Length: 100
Length: 130
Image (cartoon, rainbow over all chains, first blue to last red; front, top):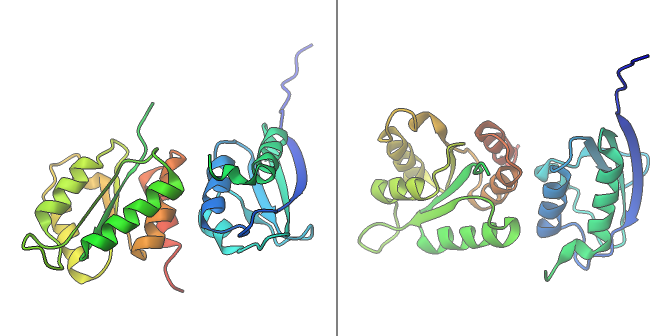
């Protein structure tokens, strides 16, 4: 028996934005750059009911102007959705690797 | 690894051009070919076609080059520098209609992900005032 399996998946997760200045220019660039390394469609919202924006769009991510202590919600759909959401949450938790 | 789209920054002021390039390097990193030019050959404010042509050459990538400019002459001189490029290169250089600092950071971020010249330009131009 052979069947082609479309391995698309959905994933979601949220994380507290603890970065001192919030989602400003440099963190926005890092988040977008990381999002663009995945195949999945990835969206970001500041509330679990949206509005959802494209996490791969630097202009839209920067325009969120999310302040410190915002909860960032991610959702993704595609072959690598789970690792994409985990990676983005990790980036926020590691404070965008500032001072690297 | 295939190179990413290059970014050229053209301002009337060398300080503005250098400062914009510094912001791109610090925020976006080293993955994007980058060059800047500004000032006239006499040391005053202005732009020069030769300097722009040299900057395009410096930031050259087979995927193309996006130019960010400030005012009037920076745009017309950039267009002139593009006109002077040989066939095969001319059509792979665009002058973006975007604010120079914000546009450069946005364009470079897009370029750093391996995006096409057209995608890089569109991202920079999303920054245009409504």
